[in-house]
Length: 90
Image (cartoon, rainbow, N blue to C red; front, side, top):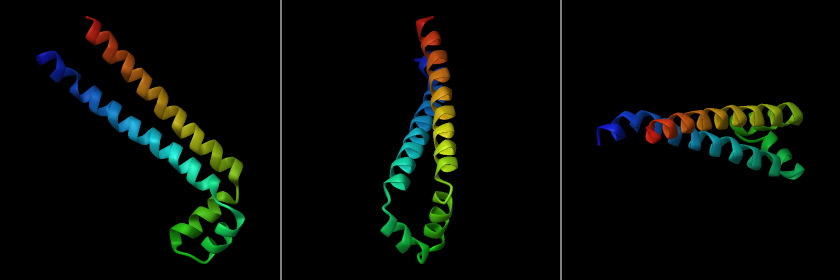
């Protein structure tokens, strides 16, 4: 039981990283699923909608940023998973 408590912070970090990875994946899907008519409507919408339209103005850069953040998140997740696996094995 004591060993599980020592792993708890690592496990919590893993769950947070899974959530972050899901956020980046969902952001990619949501932003790049928008049709041109949606973008025209969003140009006159709320401030967050206008920001999304501005970000999509340079879609290659936006996609690169989202994919890079997701990659870093997944690398951190698997690094922590390796640490946890090694500690469990002992």
